[in-house]
Every structure is written in C-alpha cells, then in structure tokens.
Image (cartoon, rainbow, N blue to C red):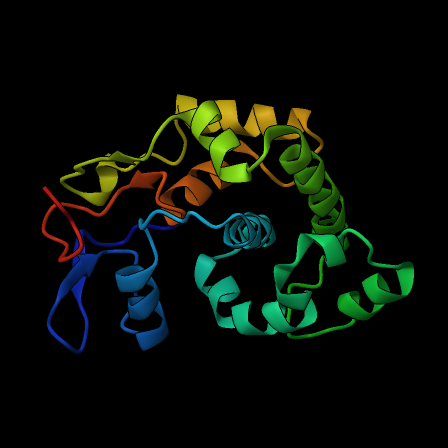
Length: 196
C-alpha cells in the first residue's frame, strides 16, 4: 500500500489515514471495515482471498471489484470454491470484472481446500489465527511512516499459512490482511478512527 500523506479529510471533513482517497467507497471501507476485528471465518476467507488478488496492485483496484468477486466467487463460500472445475476457472479467467491472473485464480481454489482442511483440524480459522499471531493489537502510529509493511507476526503467519498449503500469502500480504481484519489496528493518531 502506498502511503502519501499522514491524514486526509473526506467530503464530511473527518480526518482519515493518508492512504484513503476522497472516493466515498474508500472512505466507507476505511471508516466501517479497516481495522475492525472480523470474527466470521467466511469473511476472513474472503479477505485473505482478496488480499492475495491484490498482490502487486492497489487495494482500491480490488475494492472496486469486490462486489463482482462476491457474485462470481459464490459469496466466497470455501466449500463451493474448493470444487471449482476447469470450466469454471476458464470462465473466471475470461471475466473482466475480476483480476484475471491465472496464478491468483488457481490459488483461490487451492486456498479454499487448505482453509477447509485447517478449519476441520483446528475448529475455526479465527481461533487458529489468534494462536498463530496473538490477540488483536492496537498500535498508535503518529504518521504513516510509522506503519510497517510487515512484522515478525506477519512473517510467522505467512510461514504458517504456506506450511498449510496456502498461496499468495507472503508477509506483506499477511500484514495487510492483519490490518484489514482487525488483528492489528493501525489507524494513525489524528484519524477519526484512531482510538487512544
């Protein structure tokens, strides 16, 4: 993620983290989702899949396509995605409403299988995440320069996921996933969502 400013204000005058553009879709995502703890395994699977799709691109690119992803990926139901056929994958690869990258599309299927196997062994993805990286943590970065791209915890999560068979889950992607899912709250001081 590219950090340009420390804080920006939207049309409503609220100060926000500097990565947020003035687009209402981005403002809504920042205000209502980013940094808030997710507790639903399906929502966590969706977010991890989308973070993998984002690799090498901006999150805004994926965010604009998220609703279409939900439609063509069967609501991110891992049971359905794990059973995608070569014909379904070919259809996805031709769909301009998503990121048409064969490796990322193939990874979504193998990750669904890995996710289901992990949940069967561990009981829940959220519980496993907390055992792997710890409970949610709130940071207090003064500026965007104080926000890391990766941490020892994201390194550990990436290694653990890769060991379980997940793909497109490098440390930087894992840290972005941790931020977005509320495992880490990195709203900068001065942002209206920052909590002391």
